[in-house]
Length: 203
Length: 203
Image 1 (cartoon, each protein chain N blue to C red):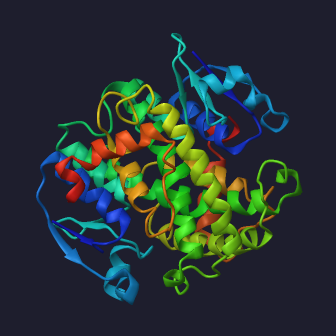
Image 2 (tube, helix red, strand yellow):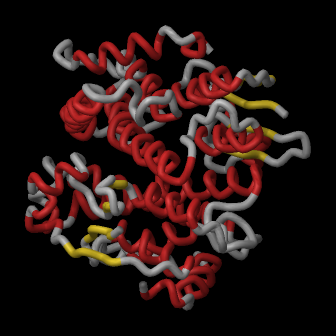
């Protein structure tokens, strides 16, 4: 099996960090999402949505969507659990992960896609007003996460989880989106230093 | 335990259909999201994100986010499985569910939030151009789902899953968003009639 990805894009990084935390080694195959590689007929057969990463199993079955790929490996290699443990633990991770994905990562992505000149040929139409509107939504979300991290080591609780992976990738993606974490969010700064120091952050 | 919800909003409906498919009975407590009930201090303690539905366990622990609530009940009552079975089956449901959520439901929601006059006090600023831009994204997504349903009984495969629940709620939410499914998407029309005929659709 192998993962088709574009190394510098944020979503494939989520999967690489996840696999590094699990200690899973896998073959990666690079495609450049900016140059139209993903609209080839061959790739569209694997993922009609034309997105990376895409896990291709040995029998050719393709699994797209970062979180679907992570969940596949969570089932095959349950330790350490990165989607939580037990009914309540798994629900908590799902809740926090969705807050981070929909409230933070998606909004940073909107800022990037609607304001960065390099995205003009992919995001049509680019709507600067929508990009700008998301900037304050990002800050609101960081404020709520900062409050959460006042009393919690990691985002979903005492254990590192996929919610931390997505939050790390999202916050690092603020740089190309020309956004910065305000210094006053001290709990986020502390948490970000912690998770960035894990070897998986370099995956 | 009980679920705090706003009955006519789409997200709580996802949870009600899920519980009906599982045959689970639970107490619902109504709050009106349009009148500011969700910004009360009491509710903010349960969910600082101020969204419904919110499951409150007997010990007071609160689980928000529709899919997190569904996952909690999937763990407690695994039959029938609505998140898939086995590593590959669960990954497939996750993949299809995300396509439906992010590609369809979220885009319909953007049309509604940015174009419906009733949302002007909740979505600030309302950006009509962004609402309009999402209309063609909705059609593109319906087109890909229509192609999928040519060869598949349900969205994620042979079995009804949470991907069908979210797609049903999303497509029914097209009405208040003043959108319609083009007649040419015959597979969607067939699938929609099938899932709407299930008793759970009335939950």
